[in-house]
Structures are given as structure tokens and as C-alpha cells.
Image 1: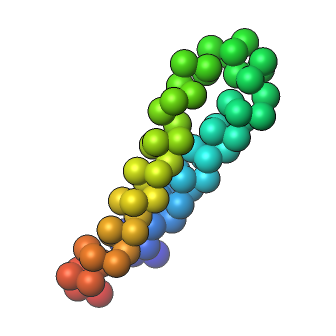
Image 2 (image 1 turned 90 degrees about the vertical axis):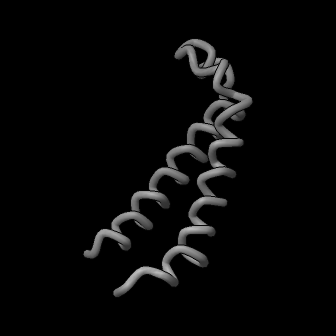
Length: 68
């Protein structure tokens, strides 16, 4: 697996993990509060959107200029 493909796989994993944390905080806020993750509530969704935007930019803009 090349480095650029690993980058895409790692980015997809990061989006899935961040989306899972977002779901956990919104669906089970009692457990999130007990774990101390409730202050992250306003940020995890924004981070997920930012990761998706970066992934789109990387795949559609930057990868075109990378030599195979």
C-alpha cells in the first residue's frame, strides 16, 4: 500500500472515529458526562466536517498532482 493510499485509509478511520464519538455524546450524554467528554460536544461535529472537507480536497485536488 502506498503512502497516499494509507493517508486516505487513515483519514477515513479518523472520520469514523470522530463520528462515533459525536454519536456517543449525542445519544448517551449521561455516559459522556461521566467520562468527562461532554465539553467536547460543540467541537466533535466541526472536526468531523473539517476532516471530510480535507479528505475531499486531498482526493479531488491534491492527488491529481501526485505522481503514481
